[in-house]
Image: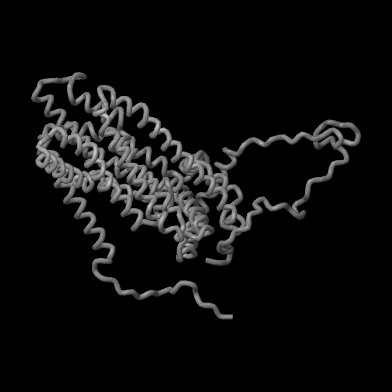
Length: 456
């Protein structure tokens, strides 16, 4: 019986010039570069060259720590670096430029209309700034969600994308605030701990480096939950990101308005609201990451039955400690190339597990089979380097066996010694005896069988 392939091998499709990848990348890079140059000129104009350099040196300190934290959260299924570079550049250049221009224009307009500059500054900080800044940062999350959908599959991806975008935004904003504070100290002659620069550094870099990421992460969680929703819930997918954005604006407004709550309003909001919110969101992200590891352990046994993976691999790939041990083992025995091969193997296996889960839930898309086969082929080519390391990691992290107590009646002659001295016990099944399958799960999608020894 003749069958036709499910997907055509050659598709001739006419594309307009603006749909080509190099045109889009070129336009995006040009936009970010121009935004960076303009924001650089604006910040330098407000702070001066010396203030700009001081602000830059102080503002860069928390950036590596925040990027490393978000990258650590994304260790289960790490996204490509190009997405993170885009998000950081968008936050530091485009979003910061939009915020500076829009906030300045809105504040001046309110001051002119009300003839009350003090009220205009308060209204701009508590109402205008949260709406403008969170909307500008959310644009990066929306772009990744729309154009890098394969890399945006859940809550952790939304948190990472939003957090890195907000880190870039906070970096530029800290340059402006710290540079301005340094200029003020130069005029007043203050220095040391009593200076405005030291106070600004303590509040913005030491106490609250996570403030902007915390706000925008709420938007990312909304997009992440929308990514988990099926195509039937279109209204939910549209409302969840909007709800996350509104929560981000509300938290941002509360943070900016804390100074209006009295002398200790800032510390009250920080202790009673910001710190618990940070702890709750951190717990949520770590719990979500543990669920992702559980997905890996639950979905990969289907590929063990099909012959693509060994029985020890789902356990090793579902443990961050085992993954780290596998990379260290490969580095010791095969150098950096071996460690990179194991890391690539882990990433492909995790992607297969998540793709299979989305397929079971009806969210994999029409190219499910093509993507699954491509990932499995990548695993097959890396197996010689990765399998020994993962099997070593599985043995190193396996829990110790729990001894099963044998009741006295199992020994007909009253003996209580071990298996070598027991009588009347049924022998263990031999190699040809029927075995109970270790993974009774029957997958809805039958994976491809791996190539045999005589196939290329």
